Amino acid sequence: MLWKNTSNQFGHLSVLLHWLIALAVYGMFALGLWMVTLGYYDTWYHRAPEIHKSIGIVLLIAMVVRVIWRFVSPPPKPLASYSRLTRVSAVLMHILLYILLFSILISGYLISTADGQPITVFDWFTVPAILIGQGKQADTAGMIHLYLAWSVVILSLLHTVAALKHHFIDRDVTLKRMLGFRPE
Image (cartoon, rainbow, N blue to C red; front, side):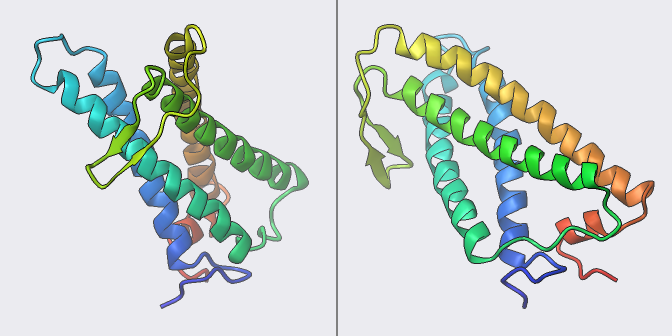
């Protein structure tokens, strides 16, 4: 089993982190959209945000692991068929997605801890409130969180379209590498 990346193939850990984080982000997006429709007396009014916060902290840990893993096991080299524009735009898109994801997670933390209460993560551990009493912290962080979430969804859809373009139009191995298959 290939765990580390090679010069032409993603290892299983990179593929697993990529797809688990992608699923978690879309799941969190859907959960967030659903949560804001709940009424105070709805059964899930308090439970859904606790689940959202817990998954958010786990996602933050996964993102830190993912960044560390990129340094331990650098991604494969770009394909020789890529133009300079493709190479530069791919790097910029990945950097932007990482920045946005970390920003969403930090803004979510600021929303959740604005009242000074720690975040309890699935009753496993708690994350203390560090920055509190900053005026309208929850409101400001909430607005930022919303716009960043939509930005990540839109950019990740563009990322998906680019991968499909490579697969169906360019007929290269970009998508196969992202799915963990050995390039031909």
